[in-house]
Image 1 (tube, rainbow, N blue to C red):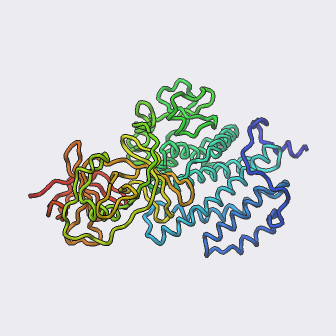
Image 2 (tube, helix red, strand yellow; image 1 turned 120 degrees about the vertical axis):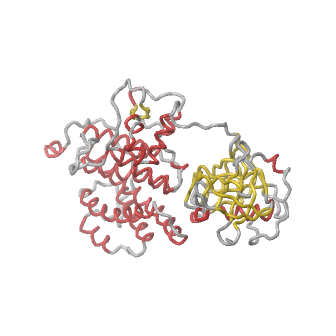
Length: 512
C-alpha cells in the first residue's frame, strides 16, 4: 500500500472521471499475450509484407488485452512493445495521405486506412486502461500514459474524419478528460525533450480540425490543415480570461463536439468552456502565409456569429435518383442526353431541348442508384451505395436525374458540386451537394480526345463564362478551342477560380 501511494502523482485529484472502455470479457482469453516474453516473438512473426493482414492481427491482439478481465501487471512494458509497431504504419500513411495517389495505390490505402484505424482505436483503449489503472492507484508513469492516450485519440479523430465518418462523442469526452489531467500535471506547456511533450499541440490541432468540419474538406486538405494547426500551436493557445470578448467559446463538458457547440444558439455554461483567442493568428502575416488552410478557417471563425451555420433550412424529401459523379461521367451524360442543362431548379430544365451533336464519346454510363433524403434552396442530400475506391470526392461534379429517365430523354434534376460527405456504413455514403448557378453544356477541347472534356457554364448572376475541366488542361492564360453544342468556340483562361487534384474551375473570355 505504501509503494502505491508513493507512486501516485501529486496534484492529481482522486475524484477525476475515468476514461470510457469496452466491456471486459467474461473470462481470460487463452490467446491474450499478457507478458512481454510472449508478445515479443509474436510481433516478430507478423506478416509485415501484407499490411492489411498485419493490422487485423494487431487489432485482434490489442482487443484481447483491452478486454482482459484481470489486471495486467506488465501493461507499460506491453505498450512499449506495441507502440513501435503501430508507429510504423502511422508514418507510412502520413507520408502518402497528402499526395495524389494513382488508382492502384488508392485501392490499397482504402483498405489499409480502416484496418489501421481499428488498430489505433484498440491501442487508444489500451492506453486509456493504463491511465485508469494509474488513477486508481496503480504503479507507473501517468505522464507517459496520458501522452500516449491523448496522441492516439487525436490521431483517431483524424482517421475517422478522413474516411468521412461522423465523430464519436466518446472520443471527444476522453480527450477533454486527458487534457484536464495533463493540465493538472503541468504537461500542457511545451518543453522540448520533456516527457509528455506534444500534448498541447495534439489537443489544439484536434480542436481546430473539428471546427473546420473535415467532412467538407478533401482528404489531403484536411491532413494539411491538421499539420498547420500543430505548427501554429506554438503561437496560440487557450485563454483563462473570462472576459475575453474575441475568444471562441468551446464546450468543455463533453456534451457536444466543438463544431456543434460553436454552432449552438446558446453558449455553454461558463464554468465548462475553453476560450480560444483568434487574434494572435488572425493578425499574424506569418501565419497567413505559412498556414493557408488554417488562415482560411480562422477567418471563417472570426466572422460575426462564429462558424458558418446552414444558409437554408432542409426539407425531408424521398425520391429515387441516379447519380453521375466525376467530370467524365457527368460530361458523357450531358453530351449524350442534353448537351445543355440548367443547374438551378428542376422546372427550368424542361425549357432546354437536346441539341444535335455530331458524335458522342463512349456508350452512356447508367449512373449509380441513390435515394434523395432532403432538399434546400441551395442543394440536396442523397444516400448512395459506393465502394471505397470509387467513392465521390469533395469538390467533384455530380449530375442527378430521376431513376426512370432514359438515355434518349433524361429528366435531369440538377448539376451540382459535392460539398460534404458522411459515410453511414462501409459502402453507404451520404452526399451533400450544392447546386451550380447557371446553364451548363458539355464541350470538348479540340484534338484532346482523352482528357479534353469540359463543362461550360454561363452563370446566371453575372453572365460570365466558366469552364470545369481536367486540372492539367486549364492553366492561367492558355487559349483553348472548344467543340460543343453551339459550334466551335475559342476562349482564353483569365482567372483561376478553384483548383483541385481532379478538377479545375476557371473563368474565360471569348476570342473572336
